[in-house]
Length: 126
Image (cartoon, rainbow, N blue to C red; front, side):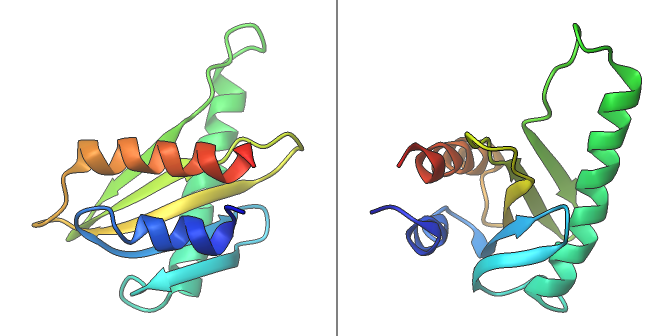
C-alpha cells in the first residue's frame, strides 16, 4: 500500500531534494517528514510555508469568482534553494500539501515539479 512514508521516501529520489514533508496547512502540522529540514527544521518550514499557502488560497478566493476559479496547483519559492509546494487533492475536503526542499545547484525544477505532481496523485489514488 502506498502511503505517506512511501511517498516521502520516493520524494527523496527526486534529483536535488534535500528534504520532503507532508503538511496540513490549516494547522501547520507536519504529518510526515524525511531528509533535512530547511535551515531550522521541518516544523519551522511547515509553519512558514503554511502562511504562504494560506495567503495564496485567500488571494485566489478574493480575486476570482466561483465560475472563474482556477485552482492553485503548486507554489515555488526561490531562496538559496527551491521550496516547492504541491496541493494534494483528496476525495474529502483536505488542507494538505507536499513540500520539497531542493538544492538550487543540483535540482532541475521542471523535473521536480513533474515528479511532485505524480507523487501527489499516487498518494490519493490508493
